Amino acid sequence: MSEEEKNKNNPLHGVKLQEILEQLVKRYGYKELGKQVEVRCFLFDPTINSCLKFLRKTPWARTKIESLYIATFKRES
Image (cartoon, rainbow, N blue to C red; front, side, top):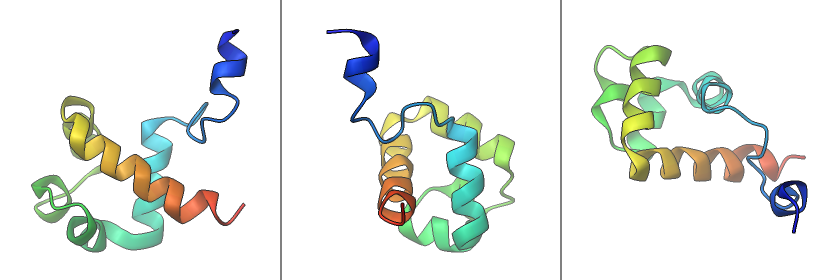
């Protein structure tokens, strides 16, 4: 099976974490993201860069953010 075939059904294929985060912040804001995914980086002095740094080091939080992105934007397509 080629790499392209593997990624055909992956809704996150080709979408960068930064794009995911920026779209979610635009839709919900940091405060609401902090309610949905309880991590400090969304609640205390949040920036895209600080959140990206945290999410790249914390797989469970990244998974929750990616799931929220899929639930929010992929059902609209």
